[in-house]
Length: 161
Image 1 (tube, rainbow, N blue to C red):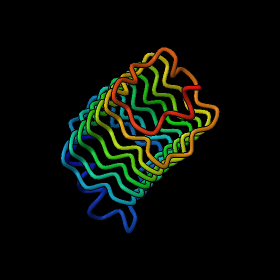
Image 2 (cartoon, one colour; image 1 turned 120 degrees about the vertical axis):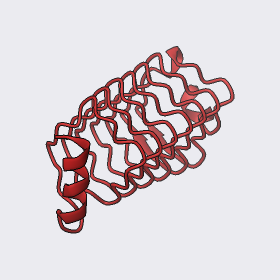
Image 3 (spheres, rainbow, N blue to C red; image 1 turned 90 degrees about the vertical axis):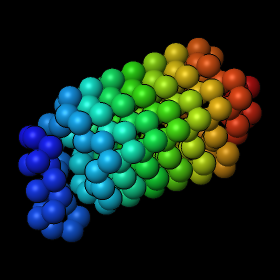
Image 4 (cartoon, helix red, strand yellow; image 1 turned 30 degrees about the vertical axis):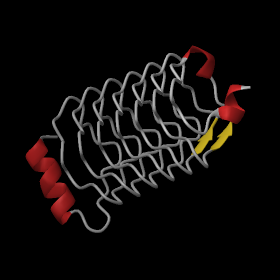
């Protein structure tokens, strides 16, 4: 799928657009408004998704390996079982997001907001969480925090014990 085909699908695909299983790997989809779209099992590996709006999207089981989501808005999205390993999520808004079973291994979440998110059975092995805000997040079964950079991160106190 090309950027133009994606924009056409979002404009005419109904409300919300259903792009489940779409292959958007290595595309530049920066600054696109995907709000509330169905993108379950979509592939964004290596894509540039900078400053895009993905709030309230179904992104469950999607793959974002090596993608750049810097400054994107993923608030209240469903990222259950998503693969975000090696992704760049610097200053990304993940507030109120369902992250159950998500893999953030080696990802850069520096300065990201995960306020009020459901962080259950997620992996942060080797991730950069410097300055990330987990205030009010539900943290249960979180793995890899012992190998992550948590300097300046807020709201992780209970998960680090």
